[in-house]
Image 1 (cartoon, rainbow, N blue to C red):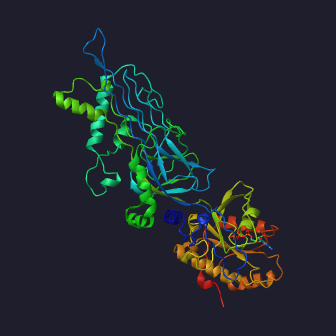
Image 2 (image 1 turned 180 degrees about the horizontal axis):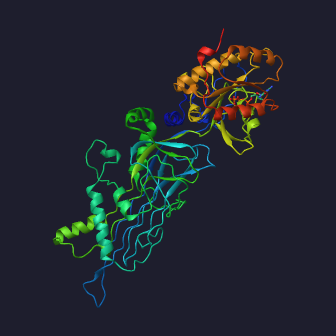
Image 3 (image 1 turned 180 degrees about the vertical axis):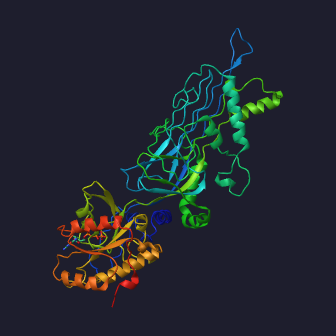
Length: 530
Ligand SMILES: Nc1nc2c(ncn2[C@@H]2O[C@H](COP(=O)(O)OP(=O)(O)OP(=O)(O)O)[C@@H](O)[C@H]2O)c(=O)[nH]1
């Protein structure tokens, strides 16, 4: 049990889980106090952000077509009247502004299967889709399976009974034309079977066909898209609830893998790494939808199978069985990663006043307290200028010296500033004042630059400025003067975030930096440290 929880914690956080065998500690980040500031540390709370998530998804299998003969007094020989099976549901990710991280997601998601066809030409129900909401800025890495595709809203042709979801409908006619088209589509999809399932990674042919080709022919409103950014999309077959899914437990193979995944998580992740296709898609706009696993097509009912197939009786029987068998849904294994999208990234040691500054600059109200690691997840605020120019500012949890060795909260959150255009180093002028055993601001700056460079080479070359915070504290003025002497090349703004002193100038400074044609980053050689 502990082993599984341990593996789970390792999976969602790059940090080492607590060593004590306490179930209550699961899900908490172990945050050590920064150097020189021991004593007050954040209480361990199970509210850490989940910004990396491993997800396995399976589309619902299609329902089988029905083979049935309807006889009557006047027609002793009878006519085929078996309905088509319904299509399985899709697993869909939807981008939402109201979601912060992946903590609400399930590691395994499965859409429900389509209903089987029934006699009297009744088609099976379409399986319900499974929709999960993810935050804006979600990047998707493909570990295994099919490329996800975006659902694009396009005018579609008139619905025929095959398209109507979630209903058992009477098919008005068993059109042999439709039947032939479906058979052709089915044949082409079977001949193009691709190896997508886990069992087939060794290159041998698998039973699972790639539904994509057939899918594209039958449904014209979906398109294969890679890493492209579409606007709000909608999907006509959406059904949220999956509670009454009578078929959920049927695919045991899929759920059996859960144990395997948890038990050998670390080993498996390492093994999988080389195969990962990084950043295959990004979800950047609210409402955007991405189909990550497709439902399988339903089998054909014998009413749809044309009589004039020129086959021997035995072969015809075989062919009918083949055509009436539904296709399985596709399976995918993904890693979701959250990279916030902001223009300005606030970086600083814990307690430097980043969250206070964010609340002074914007309407964001992050948690503020006088202990280190109050911020456990990134906060984003919006700074709007008089000309309605808007800048997004991200406040990430504090960095400490040695973060690249997994100290403090480590580098886990730096991905949130990877995309920012401008960096604002928030330095605490009061760290060494009033008997505090903190680090002087120029050393804070050096440590931050080293950590950022450890995370990503060249990151500190971005346009940067320095916020010398807590200028209101006694003795801070002298430290500020010393800082100006010791650091060259970037603008420094003295600020008291708590009273909002110097904040208007900082706003202008940030704007100038965004607009500047040749702004500079912080260079280690231009920081004088004893
Ligand atoms: N005197 C003074 N105190 C400040 C100022 N800005 C912030 N503080 C205080 O510094 C402490 C830490 O502020 P936070 O905004 O939580 O600092 P942080 O950098 O977000 O801290 P982490 O969440 O640990 O990363 C709080 O007690 C604030 O009230 C300031 O300008 N002057």
